[in-house]
Image (cartoon, rainbow, N blue to C red):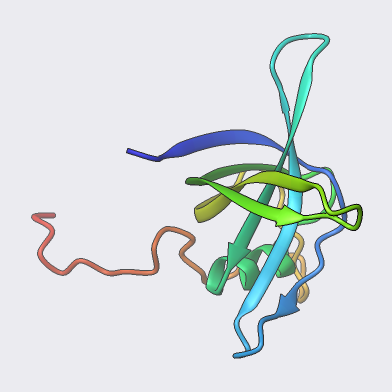
Length: 124
């Protein structure tokens, strides 16, 4: 099983890019405090609707929770050395602090950040 849940703060301004097929994508880093003096900086990638929402409603320094998988990639750098890069491929996000609204301050966005699936078979 490959599942990771982390809570921390976004380290850089959010920059939403597009893949070649037009899908929104964000690459950033989350700062996670291990204890009073130690912090880990973990790269993450969010694609699709999660990237769109994060681009609209979060920014540098905001506290978030990421749920996803650890991915390891290999590449060769400019000096022809093989490098290994590890990141979180995010499947679900939760914004833990204020939302930055583009419209009036009193309005709240009508987005569901969890899976974007409605299960009509729920017993309640």
